[in-house]
Amino acid sequence: MSISLVIVEDLDEVRQGLSQFLSLNPEFKVLDTFKTAEEAIVDLPKINPDIVIMDINLPGINGIECIRQVKKKVLRTQFMMFTVYENDEKVFEALKAGASGYLLKNTGLLQITESLKELYKGGSPMSSNIARKLVTIFREQQADTEPVEALSKRENEILQLLAKGLLYKEIADQLTISTGTVRQHIHKIYEKLHVQNRTEAINKAFGKSS
Image (cartoon, rainbow, N blue to C red; front, side, top):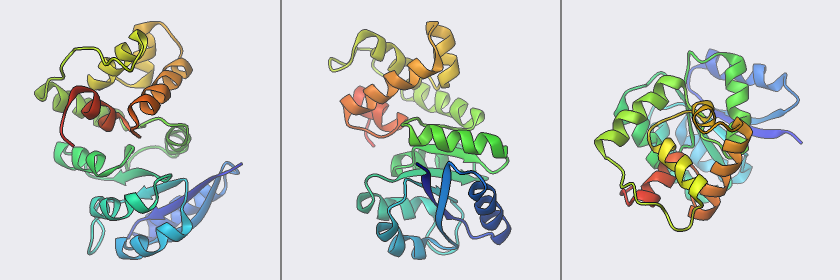
């Protein structure tokens, strides 16, 4: 079973190149591509893909606002930001709008495919320097360390490490477990808290406003 994708990107060479590359992989199926958010807002609810790869700097409505407008109409769809922007404001704004992943456009093609698969499985893949930026954000908004009753001791440990901006592999290394086990725990955390990504989980668990 292939993962269905839609790409929203105004630069022809990026949109077409990414579409062609992903179409070569039998694990993915590119259903459509759009040059503007306005087109995507109209057509995404009809297509209902597994994942939307979304640029931020689009002509007219930007990618973040596009997610805000369409997210409630495509509840099963996950959004992966794919952009040149790496400043704190853009990252956090995109995650609050409903994005579950954030990759920079200089990300390698193989890492893009692995990140899309991770996102499909319930993860929140991010370029490593983006994850590091979240450390600063959550340190500035220091999370309450009280455990969340709905979560197990191990799930609470992992949630705390997520709040510090650690990547899955770093969490696995620190807790001496496999990255697959980390993913399973995070999936359970998202289920129990009724959220879809890292930021929503931390906001809900620690009482941060979204």
